[in-house]
Image (tube, rainbow, N blue to C red; front, side, top):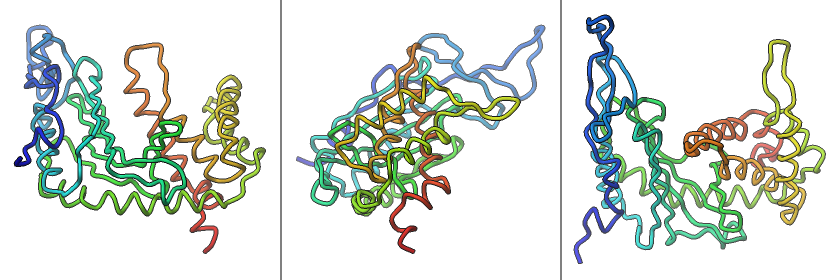
Length: 289
């Protein structure tokens, strides 16, 4: 059977497959110069706004370019699981893809596969991006790359190029293999529980105020509970790292927009992991330098 886009990954759901409409913003009967509403024509709902330079395109265009890129990348997408998330009535979207054919257990020491995320937005709230991570099966954590992001980020005013996507995506398995090797080394970097909790309190559980920073005690207690749930991993950097990736992956929200909150928290945790303190204290490569 010849490979087609639909054999690589499924087509975009109909709820996300629409051409956004730009309408001039009107005040007192007069159009505001260079200001537009972005409208979902299927629901007649305003899903964003922008200036004349902002030209939102049907998500299906970039999704199909992504699928075409994967078609030529050589990646094995058979048995892939795809979950689509509709964000803010179609203002943004995310596809979470688990590629079961890529396994890292032999290197990492526990079951793990490759996962990719595809994100885009009509309201410019989420950057157009394709990312790859290791997916730890024991806790279903998306493991933020410990050194640098694996993927592609584009401006909303540009189109995804299938050839570029294919060339970059073809390197994902080897890049994640190197990340798995780093994670395995992290298992040998000793981190006492008190030091881990101190780090989490200062970097995750605090929030700014007019007079400085304060600790969210309730949130800290929950973080400590998450940390202790990973005690089987031992007192090491990998234990702390899993606590952080758990926070970024398992997100709850009182509103229906869980995906937006999870993406925001993921970005916050990514900044913590890539921050100077985590890198200099807990990353094996820098510690050995």
